[in-house]
Every structure is written in C-alpha cells, then in structure tokens.
Image (cartoon, one colour):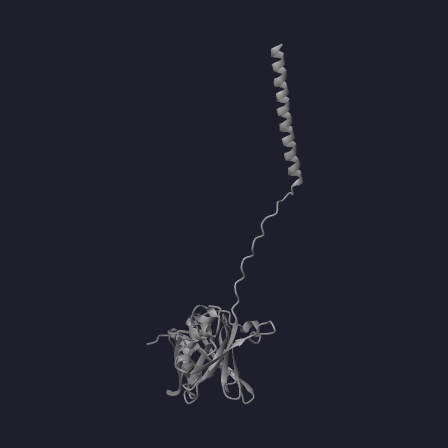
Length: 300
C-alpha cells in the first residue's frame, strides 16, 4: 500500500514537471512569433566626404626683370617654370591654365585648388621666374556661380596629340641623328641631338652650286603653356615658334597661323627609314609647300 502511494506521488511529480516544461516552451514560441523578423540595427554613420579645397585664380603678369627683346621660351628659368606647372598638374593642384591679352600686355591665368592664399603662394616657391620677378603674381579667391568647365577649342580628331609620355620629347626621338638629301641643285642637311634637359637641339643648312645658301638653328622644347613647340631661327630672319598640334604614325606637325611663311612644319619618318620634312602655308594669297626628302647619314 505504501509502495502504491509513493508511485502515485512520483507520477504526479513527473506530470507537474512536464506541465511546467510545456508551459515554458509555449511561452518561448509565443515570444519568438511576436518579435520582428529582423531586429533593428544601430544606424551606420556614412563615410566622411573628403573636403573640397577652395579655388583661387592666379594672374601672371610680366615683371620688372622680364627681357622684352627675348622670346618667352628663352627667358631665364623658363624650363623650371614649365616643370613647376607640370608638377602642379600631376598633383591635381592646377585645375586650368590660359593666356589672354589686355591693353597692357600678354598675361597668364591659372586656376588652382589650395587651402588658402598662402598655400597658393607656396606652389610657386620653386618657380625661378616668379622668384626673380620675371613674373608677378596676383592671387584672388575664385568663387564660380555657374558650374562647368572650360576646355580648349575643339580640334579635329586627327589633330589631337595623344602621346604624352613622362618626358614628352621621348615620342620624337626618332628624329635624332643626321639627315641629308637634295632637290634639284639644292643639297640640304640636318643634325638633331637626342633630348637632354627637356630640349632637342638641331641645326640645318643648304648648299647650292657649292656655296652656303642658308642655315638654321632649331630646337624642340616646352613652350610657356607646357606644350611642345618647334622653334627655328633661320639665317637673316627673326626666331619663330610653332606649337605641336599632332604627333602620330603620320609624323609630327607644328603650326603657327600668325607666321608669314611657313605656317606649318612637318616631320615624318617613313616606313623605309627615310625622313620627309616639309614646310607649307600661304604666301601672297597662294598656298605653297617645300619638301625636303632626306635619308639618315653618318654624323662624321
């Protein structure tokens, strides 16, 4: 009898325990069903937007040390000045550059992004033309009220210079060496040195009937805008500069529409290794061209 009563007590205890466990499980399931599927997450702060530095306009005017009778590319410190502009462009400091002319003189304008005016001035610490007062700076904050960007005037696709190696003159090294040719009674010769110090130097002359007919000093260098230019000083004539407008498989083309004649100078390395030089333009209302076919010769 006692054993039967103890068994009944144990059975009741087991039933109570099972009932408690079932109730607990039911409460857990009910809570899980009432909770949202995705618990709200703490908002993630957006990544900080890099600060955009303000713009400043820099006007460059020729200063008291500027030599009026010397071309810009021959002014003292010009090459280092061009290198400094190239550095600013590569560092995305120089946004835009242009030339313009007022009633007083030719001027240059640069659009620079920097923290403040002092930071703009610091960009020219290594510019010898500024330090020597060949150029005078006028700096002001630039606050555009219309968004946009000004590019150069459009050029035909064939006239765009697409080759811009680290050293721009590397693309013209095929011109280096000695070349000679003739046309009729005229014999001509050109010697071009490999680029050094940011310049290729050359000289040429022509002979007719055994006598010197003409001679010319030439160079290819960066002009004041940072573009390559062919600069020539023929015998008995003033120096002239021609900006490079094309450099591709068809050769290099240099132009100066304001020059009397020629307005265009061409150099082309042909598939057979020969060099075709040509000057062309308009003179007295007529289109003219003079060809100088040459082959590579010994420089001795």
